[in-house]
Length: 290
Image (cartoon, rainbow, N blue to C red):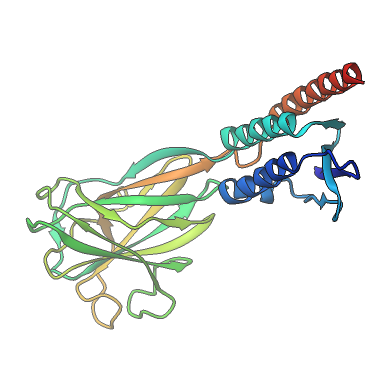
């Protein structure tokens, strides 16, 4: 889809600068408040002005097969259509869906304070996910302790003994809810794209992980958005020394998925039809004035 916004100007000295100012304000508002408008549609767009002359009218044209519309109207009507168009974009794009996935909370083993658990997340949803919070099983009771989260592209397996390739992507504070209960950590949001990402959750010196020994039947969890493959643990993360495996992180991931990133053709068709009707009405009003 390609669009074109054109300002038409006039030599008529009675043409008001107020309309010109309102039009430019509309454009600036769109740029500041609705950056998604600039990114959509992929075909891009252009704005034409007549320097040195007075504002007369504005025209907006859409070129989108199988529908094409080209119409003219006054700024007031154009502003209303811009608002409607942005409403379509923000209404059908960026609908955020909250979800969770849980492994289990049934510890039979634990790490010393400051240790790490490792596992893999395979994101299946094409839109990716944004992780908002982590809930984990803690051995100690505490108030306001820290958690660090590291990621790496690809699996965590075989890369537990070195920090090379790992990136600290998030940290957050949490309170203990007691052993075998989900202790909530409000970590800073981080996003994961489609594919496998290795995860390392590192506890602080105030607490240690409680987890479950893997037995082949408790190491895989999935839903329509992602799957988890678990896992391993180290008493001292990212150094040589014993790596305990298989170990299953006890926890819950709270995440968001953004769906419907591109407005549906039906929504766009409704907008174009409405715009054409408004353009006809504006044109008829202009004829009456003449």
